[in-house]
Amino acid sequence: MDDKDWRVTKLEEAHEKLDERTDELEKFKYTTVERLTTIFKRLETLESSNKWVSQSFFYLILSGVIGAVFFLFQWLITG
Image 1 (cartoon, rainbow, N blue to C red):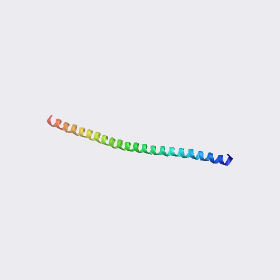
Image 2 (cartoon, helix red, strand yellow):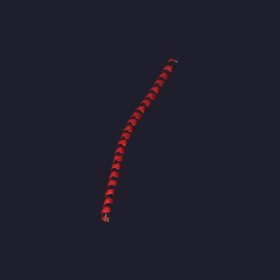
Image 3 (tube, rainbow, N blue to C red):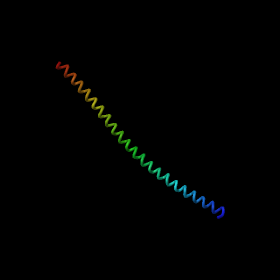
Image 4 (cartoon, rainbow, N blue to C red):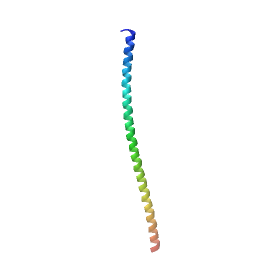
């Protein structure tokens, strides 16, 4: 095997390794994108749930305050 054939063989081997590495990196990229998409969808769900809980808590406190004020007025009127 002369020097030229040896270089061609080494270049072909290096090219095959690069192709394998590129395939691995592409697979990693796609799985990472899918995982991030799933994470962002879950975060959106959590944000909407958090908003609902916050609104529910606010309305619960507001109704309690209004009830307390009406109870105070009733107590003052009847007392």
